[in-house]
Image (cartoon, rainbow, N blue to C red):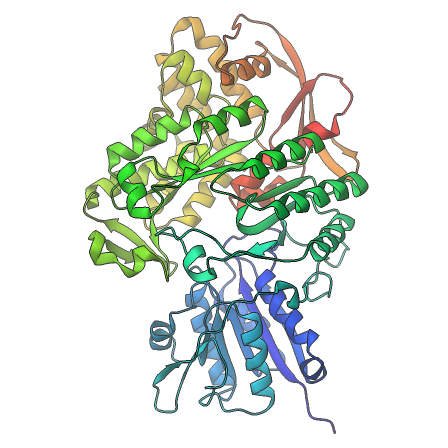
Length: 637
């Protein structure tokens, strides 16, 4: 009887509980590397187990260990799943004491001493890029090399029989990324579900690896390496074409600074050509280049002309000069952002900004001042609490900044509680603000009313958010109770609490009633009578254009995409036209002008809402068309 194949199981888990899966790109690379090796392909069986968020340990254990127990169990470790994976490793060793447990990924790399101490069942930690290293590990296991004698494998940490941790020679970065077979073109990642539909929320792709910056809070520059290396144009184009054939709406490039290199323009050339040929993809998201060059502007113009949508990012992180200095971003041109925002607004393009609360050098006053200054130009601001990520400058120099941090309740991230310019009281006060800023502004629960409230009523964006927070805390309305409970749970990370609040506001009629009651009781009485009727209608328009998460509206299909249509909506004012003028800093006629529009909503919004993916949520917002006008595909793509 032939010897049984070596059983290798690759495990990933996303952070969100949502109907569709997150694409297991990291595991796909590893599987593709093994399948590309003749000896390993012949003698191993490789499977990817990809779990959604909120799956219990017991559910994962049943799938992982319900059949043949694997010989190698490899986990792609991130801050939200390391505890679950540690528990599964302990169970696995009870079932197969001789099996190998491998930890890799951003939360494991360079952290062997701590991980071996916390999770003694882990045998190997992969440091840095894992594709070549993991292939060598599987080959060593196939050739019966003891897991306590792995000194020949570069790029790993392991333990001798006596428990001593050994870290081998560092493995150099992969210069030619095309030696990693495509997990899509090889079939290493299953792209379709049982019904033949694309099974993931978005398609993930890497066009390059590397980052030229070394920001103090970020893992990218320090851990991935400063030199940028790219996949070939031919390979990327073939991957895009495959996604287009499967009707993938949104491509997400997992790059640090897309739009920085001339090859990025070539990628978009191919993306546009494929969209024109197949009708897909319709949207492209990425982490855009921090410093915007001519390449970036050329790409943006090209995407606009082709109807390819995106949310263009201003990754500012802070407007405080002291905080930017501590972040090692003081001299980055990214902070010359106002002209860019003005240009994007004139082009009618979606833009959002990123800020980090709590960096050393930041104060409550400087942060809120920066937030409101930024909100005058772009209302959708993603605000994140500062966290200490492994292998970053902040994590390795806590004493230098006087940082006091605490591990999260449900994850393994270190959350900054205080430092020399931020007290515990300051942080507690700002955690409340962050909750409402992230739920309401970042995720576009309110999208249109910010500019009219600021221009016509003098309300800064932070004032509006604090008004809602105060009302939720004080009202006896039962519709506000779920929001109050979510806000109270949000400290110390609070990702599930954010998801609960966003889901409630977008999917439950009671959430909408809570917003309407807040507006009536806390906002409307403070508005000048001359503008009240118009602002009321803008707020109503905000609610009307929220994503549709149910099947209550008729659906039309155009060029392979489905859209829910709300026909014949009558507005008391021409709100879309007035908003366009106000955003362009022009005077708008606010006299009543009954206007009839049809609103088009891309279907399938629930997945984006439950994953609180603000970059995706905006692609499901209702877009107005004159009532009865022909369907304009480029406008709603």
